[in-house]
Length: 115
Image 1 (cartoon, rainbow, N blue to C red):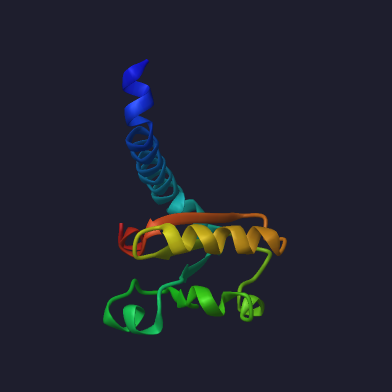
Image 2 (tube, rainbow, N blue to C red):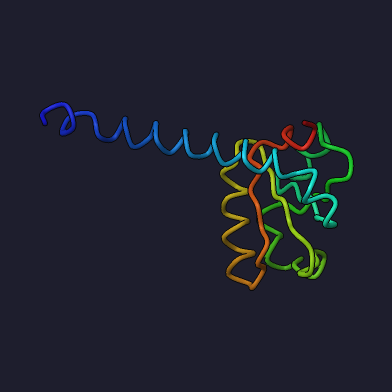
């Protein structure tokens, strides 16, 4: 019991990163099907990050602009989000869900679009 008392923050952090890794792998596996369904692939990194490197076919809408650019993302097809680590795309997913988007996925790191 003493172990849990002292190390629960580290364990919680490890579980969080494990969940992010697992979820990204799950979305990567679904990507071919999502693309067949007409998915919109959105990279929410900054314009300069996107200009430095990006995956073909992705739309760059920086996270801070996402709320004002929702009209660019169709509601009738899946949406797959990415960023540099999966954190901003996780926030983008919450924002889209809040605005009524149903089929939204966080693939994590943008390079996962290349797999």
